[in-house]
Image (cartoon, rainbow, N blue to C red; front, side, top):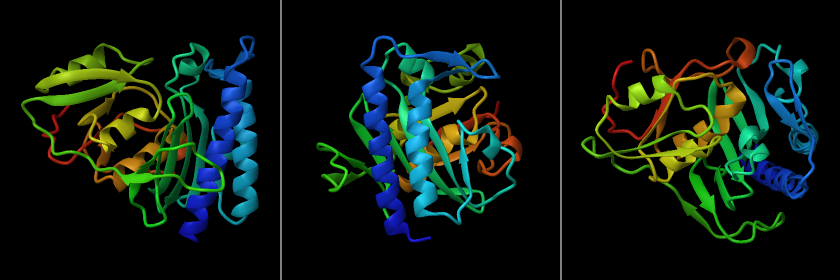
Length: 265
C-alpha cells in the first residue's frame, strides 16, 4: 500500500462525502427508512457511501472493500481490507444533534493501521497521516490542499479523577454500572466515532462500550486512537480488539489512554 496516496484519497473522499451529507442535512424533508435490522438509514448514508466506495475502488482496485451500506460486502472472509461507515451516528443526524461522522479505515492483518474520522457538522477532522501519526486538521478543509495540522496525543490519566466519554444514543444501565467502578471527575456523552477521537486528543481518558457495534463503526476511530498512543481492547478479557471477524461484528470493548487502571467487568 502507498500510504501517501491512501492518506490523500481517504481525506478527499471523506470531505466530499461530508459535503454531500451536509447538503442533505440542510433539507428539512430528507428521507429516513428502516433497514432489515430496523436501524435507520437516510439518503445521506447512501449518497456518501456511493462517493466513498467508488473513489476507493478506483484508487485501490485490488484491496477488499467492506462498507456498511453494501450488504453484499459483509460476507467476505478478509484480514486486510478497507472498511467504511459513510455516516456513523445516523440517529444523531436524524435528530440534528451534529455528532455524526464519516469513517474510512485500512485494516492490515486484523489491525486498523490508518483511518479518518470527519465530523462535518462539528468542523472537526481527525486522521492518521502517511506515517500513521494521528493529527487534527483545522482551517477550511480544501479538497486539494491540506490545512494546518497538529499531532494529537492521549494524555496521562489521573486514576483518581478520570474523564469518561460514553455513547449519546446507546447509553444504558450496564454502561453506567461499569463506569461506576472508576473514580470519575467528569463524564460526557458523544455520538458516533467522535468518542475515540476525544480520547485521542486527551479530552477524555476512557470510552467503554457495553453494547452492539460493528467493525465499520470503530475501525477508523480505533486507527486514530492508536496513532495518538491509545488502545482498544475487548471488554471481557482486555485483549486487543481485532478486525475481520465473522460478520464484522464487535464484542463489547474499552478504548482508553495507557495508564488507566482498567477494571474487570
